[in-house]
Image 1 (cartoon, rainbow, N blue to C red):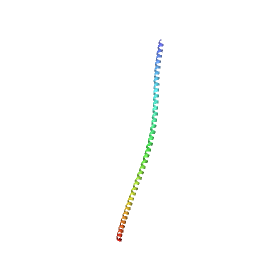
Image 2 (image 1 turned 90 degrees about the vertical axis):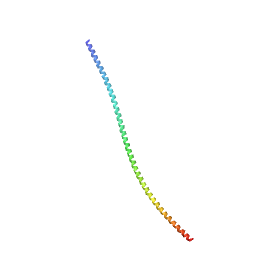
Image 3 (image 1 turned 30 degrees about the horizontal axis):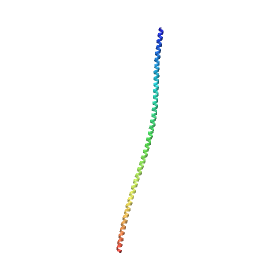
Image 4 (image 1 turned 180 degrees about the horizontal axis):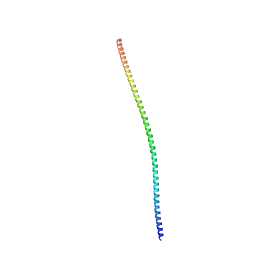
Length: 135
């Protein structure tokens, strides 16, 4: 009976040990699955971050190229504006010179016409005086 009792205790202890080992195995398997899930989540997050980083780098490059393009356009417009300003200043100066020349020419023509009118008036008076003497 004692041997039986010891065997039963040993079997019972062994079963308890097996039960604990099975439970530890289940917990270890659950921890392993959790670790796998966390690893997959971390890998997915890393992939998303790498894609976002690549996208941001691409956007940064695009923005840099756009800025360069805008600066070239601005420089071109500024140069064109300076050229147009110079052209307008030159045209204004040319117009002022032309106007002064036209004014001088007009004054000279007016003086010549006044002199001619005065000469004609004198000639007319002389002719009238001569006519009066003849009659």
